[in-house]
Length: 193
Image (cartoon, rainbow, N blue to C red; front, side, top):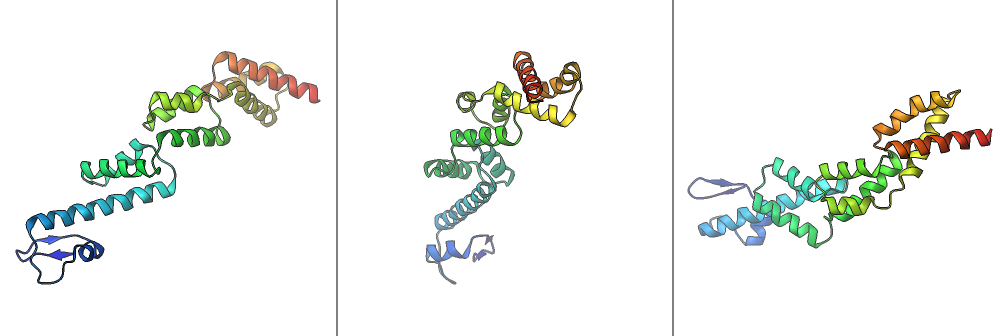
């Protein structure tokens, strides 16, 4: 806390005061006081952004939104985003690749649904499209169908379609992909028996 002779109090870190070379009783120009506040804001924004990134990878829009929610000044947020982008800590393409990889491993869904989720997180359509280009929807849907077959153990193919078909649809898979995956999973299970 920096207390000025006119009674104003400015919240700045001790490190910022030390770096500025200020000490008690020292005169400081109004411009210097503003610079101290801006420096301290930049440090606070940087610390907040790093805390967010420590939890998980994030898109630029996510970082921007979360920093705005903390009432940081817009120009400071943009400067921090540029800083993070320049040092490689903020990269929408890397975020999208990691997101798609994690999603397909933990909770598989169609490429279309993955693109929608990335769009909601602020990733551009081009980046979302390139990060989902290698998604093998039939393989993913077949794995899900096999899992549903083991879980539900239907006695007929029609029962299997009735239960697993809507599940695949909710995961974003189109009719043709779902149909092929269900047939493949059913046939594989029957050939193993």
